[in-house]
Amino acid sequence: MIEARDLRKIYRMGSVEVAALKGVSLAIDDGEFVGIMGPSGSGKSTLLHQLGLLDTPTSGSIVISGTDVSRLDDEGRTLFRLMHLGYVFQDYALVTDLDVLENVAISAIVRGRPVDECYAAAREVLERVGLGRRLHHLIGELSGGEQQRVSIARALVNTPAIVFADEPCANLDTENSQIVLDLFRRINRDLGQTIVMVSHEPWHMDYFDRIVFMKDGLLDTERMREEGLRAKQRMIIEKVD
Image (cartoon, rainbow, N blue to C red; front, side, top):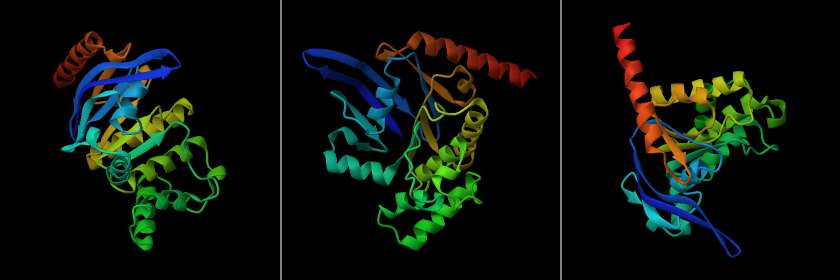
């Protein structure tokens, strides 16, 4: 689904260069729920933004579903994002003047789909995320957890190949964070939806199929190896039980 090779990202601040990614290579399979974790400043959000075409790497290549997206121009990248990718952000990024149904449907409308079809798809996905009774509520009438579920529905309405989530629980309490993560897990399992999510919360690790650990702009291979061994041990114990 995703193959990234030797990704590097350098930010220039005046005469100072900051290397956020220093040569990251990884692959993500179709249907995986992958977590990207690491300390603040490790490069995890930068990596997500490169994979999700929200930013352009300084060097390296990214292939998504057989397309070398690193070779696309700005217009091509925008079109690819619109047609193939979905996004969930920590600040929800919803339009406060629109109701719940309109916020989700508009994502489909901009793709040029028939309006009736867009609203039908929006209703269906809102039912899936448990907001079927909140269709005509304004965003300000929803809790933070409900607003994040609206943003998840918006990300899913066009049946994207991949959903990218950047710290989607950062502004939520533990209860609502668990609701959102349970929803992601159910979508991943029921729909086979590929999800790539940045997180800093250790308890979120239980939800991921695999974890990509970052440290100082590189993959933390030692930590990944340790967690891989722990995962195998848990699987053995579960089989014995």
